[in-house]
Structure formats: structure tokens, C-alpha cells
Image (cartoon, rainbow, N blue to C red; front, side, top):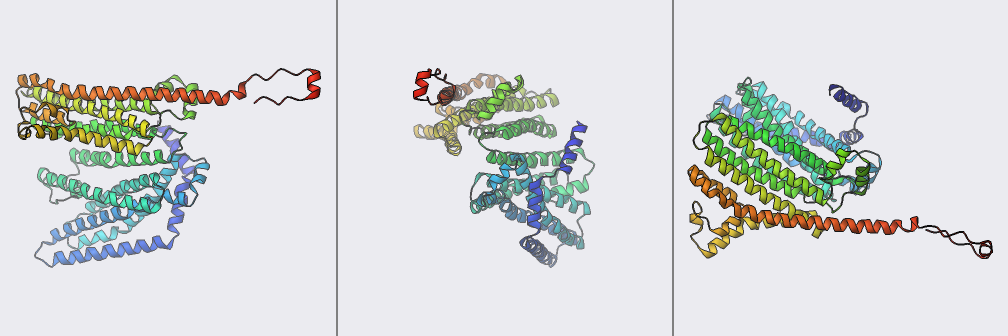
Length: 559
């Protein structure tokens, strides 16, 4: 393993990514980038100094002013990243297409993944230089105190980490659109609200960390203070580094895999990078669930957190269902030929795609494994850490109900989305229709229940109407009901999930059978067409003419 890594490192040093070198030379040689560099540094310095003057003019302790300036600097830098980086990266591939140079990149022999990685590293390095140039501005906080050098280093490193998803998102958008202007607008408009929501989530975590870890600093950048004041605590490293790897590393991987899938030719296996990401993401989700369950103090907190986590896992499996509902009926022809001549293990993997039927099998297996692994972690950790708790049965039943119910809903979404993709021949339209159907299946039963009885919603905690059992979110409602029952009563009411399971299970089987039938039909038509095209070339040539006939005319060669 070590020798293989060293060999890859030496190969990368001997043969660096040509896209990276080309893009860096083009960027650093332009006067526009130099102007943007000193303008961004000047404006950031002006804003930070103005904020410092306003804070210091009041009756505020100097240490508080220093901490406020430091957080203001990090917030301003994060806003600059969110505003500039996605749009900058969104031009990476669309500009090549508009300049008619994209085909030359494909003909150069480089793989799609190498091209995308080179574009990503080049855009990342360019904006990272801007962030590094802003580092001296953060020293203004030292004039007032309250900020340690460790906090500044951690804060700047966190900005470099936050830059990665911004660049990856812009690159993924660039791979899906043909117009540079449109990709810039979409990347910027969608990433700015995402950053705002992420900042609010980090602020909520900062409030919890301020209370639990007794940190002096509060807010979305609390982690800088956590590393400075609690460097020897294991939970600091596990939560912050592990959480960063999961919340930033996996999304960056997904966005880059999406970009690779978007630029790969149709003759290649486009879904392979996304399948690799999905398998790793499932394992990482189980590890994160294990960590959060272990950090909970009481059994009831573990149980509540587990149910919330299983709801999030249900959303994840639904995302898997939509993600892989974009495959053509048959695998690429070169892949099929390589599969026939390949080893046995490759033919086994070919059962799970590419192609609509194979990828549907992979998606279904992934949904089942993700749900089963998550509920096993949630239930197992609680039994392991609190074996004598007297409410295990009802909470176990609630966890099982929500995991099984949402898994069947996701299976239906996967099968229905794949079927719609084959019917419409458009992946985006199939996903939009599937998401709309699931949303309607979640809301429509409640509207019907209200139409029949206006007071039915008030009795959901004990006697939900039968029509509500068909809702896609009924497993979560039933799980909440089971928590308030004794274990005998919960055991007697768990069968109510059968309506949801049977309904969505039968619908999933019907859609799945339709997909398999359409794929078999497409394969027969394709093989018949290939046989017709290859027929003239393999016909038996006519017999040689006699001497008398040959002297009169010469027959044309067959085929």
C-alpha cells in the first residue's frame, strides 16, 4: 500500500496535471486577477477597520472588540468566497465549450476525471491565493486582544476548507450547462443561500458548544476558540475534524463526481463515480450516527436523536432514488463488450449497472443497506450503553417503523423515477415528476382526511384516519405515536405500518417490473437492428461464374 502511494506521488510529480498548469499560467498572467487581488484586500481592510472603529467607540472591553473583529473578518471572507468562487469556477468548462476547445481536450487522451480535477485545483489555487493575501487583515484583532494566534490559523484554514465546496459547486454547474453566463448566475444564486443556511447551522452548533464546552466565543466560528482552549480533548477533534470531513469532504466528492459524470462521453460508464461516492457516503453516515449516539448522555436523548437521524436517513435514501434515476435503457456498447471478455467479478458488478435495470438494482440495494445499517447503529448503541433502560421495546419499534416505512417509500421513488426516465427520455423531467409525486403522496392524504372530517388532524396522536396511512410521511407519525405507548400497546399498534409498506411496496414492484420489461424490449430491438446491419457483411458470397458467363459480365461483389 505504501509503495503504491509513493508510486502515485512520484508519477504526479513527474507528470503533473496539464490542465492545472495551463489554467494557472493563464490566470496569473492576466492583469484582471492582479487587480481583483489588491481591490479585494483593500476593501476587506477598509471594512474591518471601519467595524473596529465603530466597536471601539462604545463602552466595550477591548477583548470583546478583538473577538468581534475576528468574527467579522471571517464572516466577510466567507461572504467573499460565496460571492466570487462559484461564479469563477462556473466558467471552467462552459468557456471551453464556447471557445470550441472542449473537443480538443477530450481528444488529448486525458480522462474526464483528470480534466475535472485539473480545473478544480486550478480554480481552488487561484481563490486560495486571495484568501492567503487577506491573512494580514486578520491581525487587526491583535490590536485589541482577545484573539490567540491559534485562532487566526484555524480560522484561515477553515476558510480554505469552505472554499472547496464553493469551487466544486461551480464546477458541477459548469459541467451541466452550455452557456457561461447562465452557469455563473445559477452557481452564484444557489450557493449564496446555501452558505447562509450553513452559517445558521454553525451558529446553532456554536450556541450548544458555548454551553457544553464553556467557550468564551459564541457564533458560527466557535471552532476557532474550541481548538485554542480545548486542544487536548478527544471530542473536539472527533466532532470538528470528523464533522468537517463528513459535511465538507463528502459534498465536494459528490460535486466533483457529478461534474465527471456530466462531461463523460455517452460511450463510458457515467454513473460509476456517483456509485462509488454513494457507497462511501452510506458507511460515513453510519459512522457519524454512531458518534452522535455515543456522545448523547441519556438513553432518552439517544432515542430521540436516533429517530431524528432516521428521518434524515430517509431523506438520504430518497436522494439516492432521485440521483440514480437517470440511466439509459442499455449500458454503453463498449462497456458490454468489455464485460463479456472480462473476469467473473466484473460480470457480477455488471448486474448492478450501468443501464436502467442494473442501476435500479444498485439503487434498491443501496437504499436497503443504508436503512438497515442506520437502524442497527441507532438501536445497537442505545442497547450497548444503557442495557437496563425499561423503554427499549417501544423505541426499538418506533425506530424500525420509521426505517422500514421510509425505505419502502424510497424504493418506490427509485422504481418510479427510473420508469419515468425511460418513458420521457429526460432525466431532469423524470426527477422533477418523481419528487412532485412523492410530495403529493405526503400531503394529499391529509387533505383528503380534512375533507372528510375537519377534526381528524387533531386526533393524529392516537387515531389517525385510514387515508393518512397512505401518506409518505406516515412512518414518522406512527413512530411518534409508539413512543408514548407502553411496550405491549406499541407492539399491538406496529402493524399499522403495513398499509404504507404494502402500498408503496406493490407500487415499487409494478414500476420495477415495467422497467425490466422495457429494458428487455430495448435489448431485443437493439440486437435485431445490429443483426440487420451486420447481415450483408456476413452473407455467403455467390458462386463463381462459369467461363462463358464470366466472359459476358462480371458480377458485383456481395456486401
